[in-house]
Length: 326
Length: 272
Image (cartoon, rainbow over all chains, first blue to last red; front, side, top):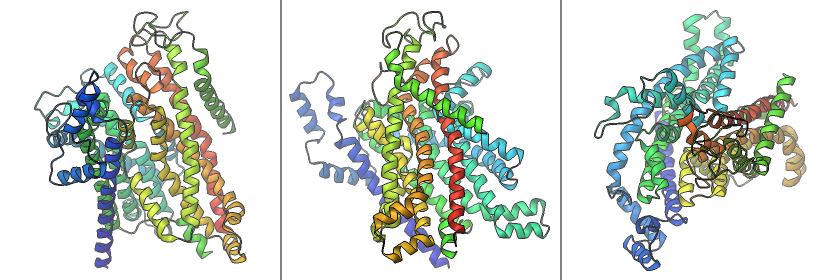
């Protein structure tokens, strides 16, 4: 049995690595082969065709795309992500600084969602159809139906009117880290959490409800198992799918960060990515998208492995299985 | 409940109509300033002015069409592609290619939608069609998954296995055995995809992707007019409300379709 688990984890890790490599090709194709080209950025708007050609040769863009791709991968594997076209600084340094800021936003948001969605999802899933369940399902539908940027803007407006003590725009002193300024984290983290709460709470409720409907839970109820012991019984079975949902939520927050960070001016990965796209800073766009997608794949992989270790997952093709046995 | 559904239908239709026909009856220029920034509404400018002193109502009317067209086109293209790929992976006898396709689809699903959107927008800046394509790309994996799982359930049904044993062609089985059970799921899925498409397209304009700065769009209106929320809330609140009504209305319509999907599943299981 342990051998099988190890093998399945290894297979999943291999798939993740293969996907990461496929992604490097996608990132490279989007940024280098599509028309939005780095030459225009470096040479400026008034450049003559001759000057543009000179820049093209200097950047090595006259070489075939495949050769440049292999070159880029080889350098990236050695930790050399190139130099920003706009600021001239090493991309690796920018990316690691931005990543730290994003993490210090992501961690409180993810913990907040996990705690709140976990508690409410359990309460709603154990008493399906109760008043709390119906209220929460309505409220989360509203949350899901509202785009993240509207939720964040609303939060910004409300806090500007009611809580002037909290700074709406993070003005981080140079050299300072976001960890040292908790008051700057509150609003962006809250905005991030608001965007991810709705779908996570629905997923958690569904896995608890699924477990509560299972025959073993009914057996426990009929045998008079009540209170905390019953909750523990159901949750033990819902834990695997719940961990899976949480990992999807955390990976999703990385994407939500792009909106929240650029709205609140938090200098994180998403903020920098939006800026790099606007200024066509190709090496920076490539490095940031690689970091974001690699982190997503890693989070999903960890979630997958943990949920497997936590217990049997709910059968994925429930109706297929029942239909076959009929 | 019936009343709610009719209300949702009317609200969604009204927002769609407003967005699609709006550019034809803008009362003023969408780019020329008509007064000082963030002037509250008066008799001539019904929503007041925006951050650059332009007529907010004109920009509101002009700013919805691209978004709605992007969302509708992406939903249509995504549904067709999702149903084709999903049904193919579930019905084909070539298991290996189908598994590869599903793996690729999972890989795309693992990425944040906005990252793909930004990447494609970086490759082809200022292009609204690319935004629509990006929306298709990010929502396709979920459609494929849902359709594939549903089709797999349907192919396991006794009547489909009987059709296979009878020697029906794949096309006939698709038409008579699979399609009737798949249709409600595909419709509900299209509704879910439309909501996601509206949100992603609006977020794209909020982030300044797609057509460049002077062009009006609801997402950008929210972004650029937030600083003047105290003086003139209209240019932020009205597009925001329209976006929420559109998504909420489709969700309210959808609940019934999803319920019917559940009924369909029970019917298949109960078939002797």
